Length: 248
Image (tube, rainbow, N blue to C red):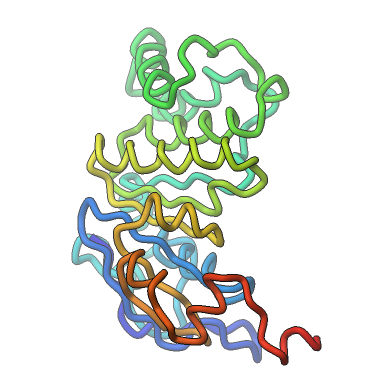
């Protein structure tokens, strides 16, 4: 489903991605790890066609999207969805309107059909009957679930999650992790999760990619990640700063 080959990206004199190579198979759940500033979000934006590489290629279903123009990219993005870190709900719309926004804008379905689709995805994320509530009335965990419902309503084949558990308490974070895994299994969608959370990595990931120095330092299963004795990997997983970092 997703293949990245020799991906490079610079911002001025700063080299962020320095030859990234990775693959995520159709229906697979991949987790991308790395320290702050390692380029995780930049990599995600390339996968979603929101950023063009300086060199290298990004393939979605064998199509090199790095060479497409904006009109061509729109067709590819139709099969994608992004759950943003801050949920990014519209404050001026209630829950039902937020979730149905994409379908409403497309104009292909009747209001009754959209309402039925909204009810269906709300049930899937465990929030039945809250269509009339406003974002301000929701807890952090509920906002994340609504954002996820909005992401999946048009039945994408790829879902990108940007720090899905950021700002949540451990119990709410665990419920989101399990929901991501459930949707991946039920909908058979290819899943890409950007996270710092080791529990999210263990719960949602089938394959883990660790970014370090602009490249994929590790491509492994979660179990292999947690069992690794490599100093770079071990220190990251266990939250241990090296002496140089500690002094800074």
